[in-house]
Length: 276
Ligand code: GLU
Ligand code: ZN
Image (cartoon, rainbow, N blue to C red):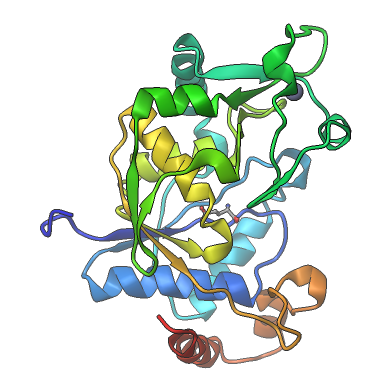
């Protein structure tokens, strides 16, 4: 990386549920890496999950970050960027890199999809049949064609080191959802580029996604950041912390009078012990 390029990190929560400790750690890691380098820390609300998105949570997120003692610059929410996603869709479709898929979740399961690094790998059903225009259609990246265009690619994780981009763990991912001109993969890749993010910081649970994002950067001629996938906080049962397993929301702790800066200090310490 050019040493003169300032470090820009971001925290990109989806307002589908309240923030919990794992989110706090992600935000703190991204914040601290930027601040230590004299760079910028951005907040981007990823509010494109349709009915699951609850925009009123964005305000709660801002209060949570403030409570943790973080400073950030907010960039536009994903819901304001749909036109840029649609433009990328058109480019990728015109180049024959996407194919339409009308499968339901059930059909994919019934087709005997094998488990990949992040759920079932799409078995390619729609690649082999003519599209049915009467059914809701998503668009998938044709991983074979993508690889043929990009050739071998490398990306760099601050902790795990150099990685050869490998789409086999995720398969032909959805880039354009049935209800939206993007999926997580496409939106986040375009937005990180548009926001000038130089260091993509997030939990290790999203490690596999970076193979896809690196490929999209090559296909769309976007700048290539570095990545920092931090280890996940584990609950006492050794399971990933998540709201559904009873970890209290940050907002509950905040409203209960807990000291957010103290909590942030504890998380920094735990993170240090986890080995970064
Ligand atoms: N909106 C994503 C989430 O909340 C963030 C993903 C990312 O940091 O790339 O899981
Ligand atoms: Zn399909």
